[in-house]
Image (cartoon, rainbow, N blue to C red; front, top):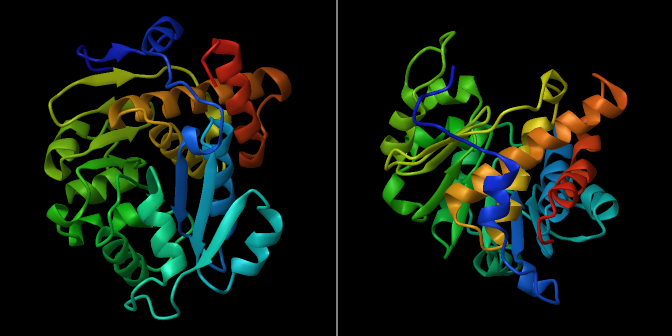
Length: 282
């Protein structure tokens, strides 16, 4: 159910907002770092990273466990690939540390499958100079155990309803989670199923998307899109709105084209088509 205060996200609103001038080089379009992955779920990093590039980010680096770095180097020729330390409590090496500190947006969480390792990695990342941090998946599950004051000012959370319940420290219910409570508790922009809320109470609602987006890996694409817009220089709230809209519009396009049954890997190219259809500067 929509909140009466939600601003509907329309094509007209997004055209009014616009996107930063992409400039004439990959550096001017922003750099994204995706930190995540595991032997069980290496593809989440791939999906998130491609999504960031598909919405116009210029450069991509990924920081992943050493068990999967070689495989991702092969399938992600557009990305710089760095390894996490074998012991999650060890400091990051110069390569990943340099990429994270030079990035315009850092996404942590896609593909991680161990809570303790995820927390240790997030703590290590938070010690660096991070401009904008996007958290997804396991990084949301461990967020209540992380001191908010150690995280960057610009923080975007991308929970599903189960993760929202964890952030609220309550059992998942059938109704819509209280996103404003989450936003204020963690002093963060929150995006959940097309609703974006800020700590000061502003909120937007993205319609569309459809059931086809309920497929494995779709959330990783969404998180990557949000990070991509943030890297381009869009503020946290608008980055979440842009990412949610592009993800939903891609879902609508794919449903019209092929029906239910498209894969998460089909969504990133559709993000680019959605922006082109809107006439947004890319």
